[in-house]
Image (cartoon, rainbow, N blue to C red; front, top):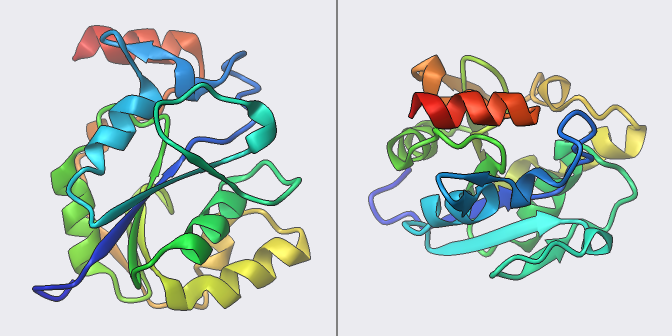
Length: 181
């Protein structure tokens, strides 16, 4: 990340939430919805974009860009977010990582070649818009595994405290995360 490089924050609020049983974006931790918490985490960015499915009708206090896909997978949200971004460099946050910090996102942004990801995988991450054709091709092929789309790219791995990357896949996960904070 250059000294004056602008950054877009992309929040992925979509997802099937099959294991969670209700929209994760609206789940509360510490009295705050996960989506609102993650949106606030991106305040340092030059622009913020939330991406999801308009059909989900999530009642959020910020606009949500429809990902324009029938697919329910992070790669669809990432593609839509990169398409909508005004900057080359984007940090991408899944809605279900309540312990994620601004410092982690800034470190990912600073490390991004084509992309930068933590040791645990592709999200959260920092992505440059130039990776869009690779991601679009992966999505069009029906292969929804974001980690496989990264294979041909120049990706830097940033070591991050694993406790900051824990995600909430079930209400019990979220309750455990809330009680540990």
